[in-house]
Image 1: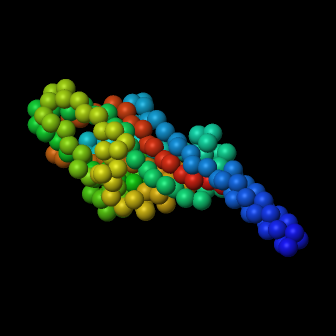
Image 2: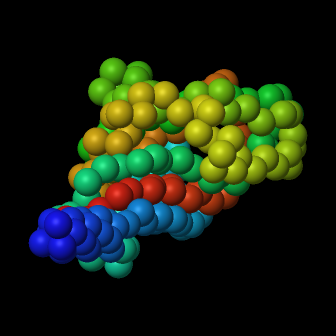
Image 3: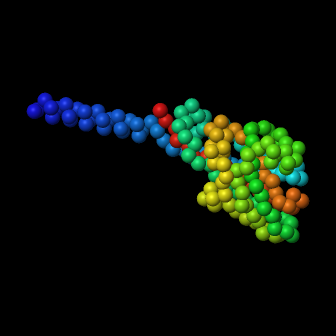
Amino acid sequence: MKQMIKHISFLSVLLGVIVLSGCLVTGTFVIDFRISDSDINDDNEEFIFFAVDLTEEDDWNDHKDKIKNIDNVGFQLWLTNNSTEAMSAKFYIAPHTATPAYADSNDVKANADLILTGLSVSAGPGTEKHIDWPTSLSMIKNLDIIKNYAESGEFSIYIIKTPATIDFTLDSANVIVTFTAGY
């Protein structure tokens, strides 16, 4: 009987060590990738473009080979409508390029994937709007596609505005990626 209790005690301790070590080698990480106004390309009248390169982030580089799951991707956005009419915008994702790969909004729609809808800003001029991360999550479309791009660490975002002639500014943006990494 004492021998059996020793075996059960040993197995309990061993199981506890295995469970504890599993918890210690897995973690959730958040990358808050800032896009400043100097990184935003609004030279094209039909869309706004910015590139995202998560490989510039230390947390990404430290764990990129151990990523188990991209848990979520969202945005924080600061916008200004400089026009006298209301506007809306849709976000598209495409493979990473340093400069826009598409000539116009029709090319973007035909070749990129829609990832965010429902964004609107009241008429201005000077009307500002902030979209926080939780609000952006309710606007996300095609989350699996976004996660696939995020897992690669690099992607491009195109913002198509309606009406196309509207004068609006994306003042800055944050792309927020949460991921689980471990052994």
